[in-house]
Amino acid sequence: MTALARLYAEIALLRRGPQDVPASILLLALTVLAYIAINLLVNWALPAPNDPWLAILAIDILFTLGWYATLLSLLRRRERVLQTITAVFGYRAVLAPLTIGVEWLVRRFGSEQSWQLPLVVGYTAVVVWMIAANSHVLKAALEWSMFQCVALVVLEIIASGLLVVALVPLPR
Image (cartoon, rainbow, N blue to C red; front, top):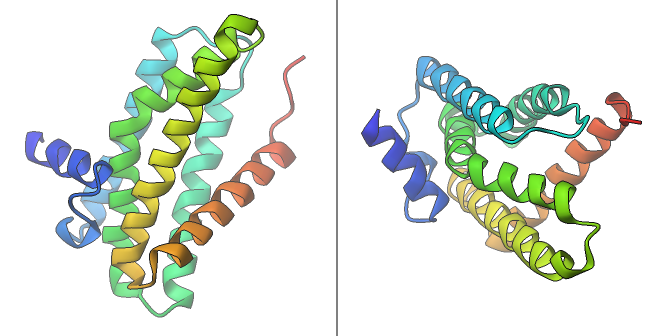
């Protein structure tokens, strides 16, 4: 387990890629379960203000699975589906405490003027890191330019966000 956590951390740090992940459906399932467990633990530790985070997490997982399976199949890279999706969930599991923590801080303190600049800077840094890590994984999987991979990741983020807005009722 330590070796896998280290591998996923190295993917998050752009030092390794999906080619270093074993192609295993069991590993993918375990990585998704670890991602869910980390999300549950961090969201439990940080009390969410009337936030449907569990529904958003479910949509995130299903959308990510579908997005990468479809994308890699359409681009005739089916042999890379397991490794790519596992790498994506692996680095996301590593970064989940940071991303959830920053999102929680934004929801909790975002309306206070003295916190706005540090929160915007922190949130932007986390989003840029996530885009960079995801683009790094895609670049290795697709053998495309980094610019094209960044564009695909941004498109994924927009599509996922629109799906969440369409499916999850806003809290009142």
